[in-house]
Image (tube, rainbow, N blue to C red; front, side, top):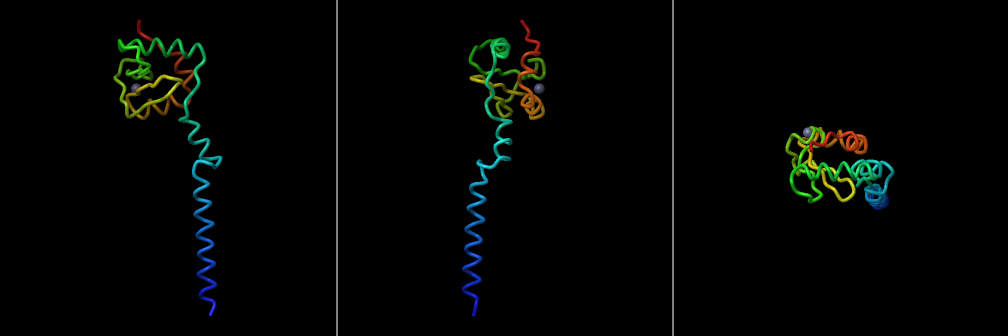
Length: 116
Ligand SMILES: [Zn+2]
């Protein structure tokens, strides 16, 4: 007797649930803080100086730091482990270096020892 009522109710619930799921994706507070960790960092002048130095280490000023900054620019970076700071892309040697850098790009950049 009430079967159609129940299935209509379920359909409404499913619609509400999927609407919630959709708006929750990218719009929720948690999603924001998640993507915030990987969002582009705006570099200050000290960071830009470090970035320009690190960029030049590989012999090309292409705004791609192809050596792993976290490994003192001694290790080759991998494009699969990138971080973005302003216009620069930094390639890290591992996801571990990438995650560490992304935690505090400013500190790691300003304190980076850039080989002359
Ligand atoms: Zn590394």
